[in-house]
Image (cartoon, rainbow, N blue to C red):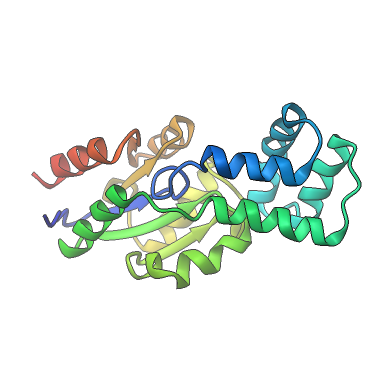
Length: 205
């Protein structure tokens, strides 16, 4: 059913809102490929993620940092395989969230995407089928700043040509939503597609 919210732009996060959380199988495959202790791998994986998403750390340097913490010695081929396994694990779309996006599109509601992600995701976001749904796509790794900084939200508002009051932001991380709200943007912490639909239906009412 179409969801029409005139006068607003709905800005969506990608990871674990539009995409599903990487599966246990994906995570196991990645740790087995990396070798070493998973209890060392995952803290290292997340510790350097903000720098990767901000574009201040290259993909190669990101994985080499994890390699050092694990005490491993990877060849270049291993880096390519790790990158591919990790990238692929974030590509699966939640079909119920997708239907919400399609219903918004049918209702003529303006939408944009704002993701904390490396530059390598930019092409997928823009040139995959998701790109057809969004007026603009904003990738932190291309902008040199990440959510929840005021700078990234101000950039989005400027590029979309809207005020904070004309904008709604959806993210699964409360800190990011609070960052948007601090600028006067309406925010919703994503927990499930059904709660998201109920929230948007409320705005459309």
